[in-house]
Length: 80
Image 1 (tube, helix red, strand yellow):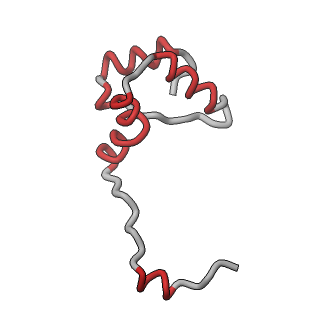
Image 2 (spheres, one colour):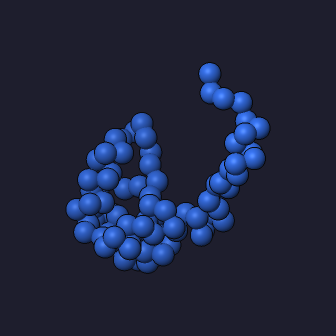
């Protein structure tokens, strides 16, 4: 994460939107500021999806969490 729109735009232009993902140095600087700066770049909704979600899933090999079935939910204890 870069604290400057020019740095973020450079990374996207140089590496391509398919190779860049959102990260943070929190608490070194506020994530709200990072999100504001990303918004200033003017990425399309599709590119925002890649930056915030799908690139990390693909690059890191992440999967969606498994959905609990009715049987699994019945076995789990109720929250206290």
